[in-house]
Image (cartoon, rainbow, N blue to C red; front, side):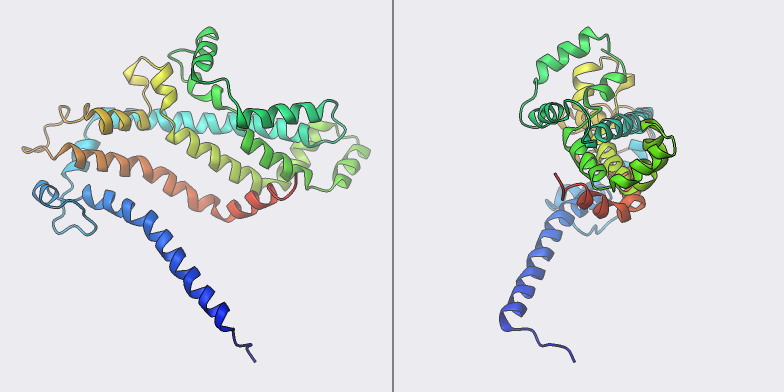
Length: 290
């Protein structure tokens, strides 16, 4: 027999559901507006200030955007930087996190303090630019990867996850003759796939959405990633309208901007379902212990 809820509990559930629905709509409606605005004709776009449901469909904006070599080249750059950057970041972060999670590591507290310090204070844009320049990374894809290769936040989450694993596993492996590298590869990594998937998603989204690195370090337009091309289009409204002759009447610049935003968002939307089942587990298990 079900226990009836009290009036206060029912009231809380109602307001909780209303609040969550409003929060979800506040995230969903702007995205629907972007998609709808990229699919309407020029006349409808000029006539309506806010579009949720298109009355007349048109793919002219997508035909123009996808007909330009700039978008495909920038997308390839973003995919390459995101893939390589995520692999480098997850490798460096996991290795450092495993070392800091071992209580017998000499100087562990001092290094942990320095990691936490960088979450509150950083060198800033100018010192970072000078460092990248002095290392000879200017106009190089490594300039987009190495400065942010290790995130202090992601490092702490992964370190806490490793600390939650039983010490007996490591002790047993050492008895069998394994060194630290073998323990990390054969025991820690297989048991930490949820954490690896979660942190990899964090890094992938960060690399995919970043454009400041290209703004500061890349002078060659052929090396620009997709997000920087999108930034050029949204802020400067240049780069696409003169590259296509597919349509007689060019859609408004805002419609082209919406189409590029949708194209830039789709890859992350495709990636997320594959790591969704690990996302909550990896985040919670890495955040409950200090």
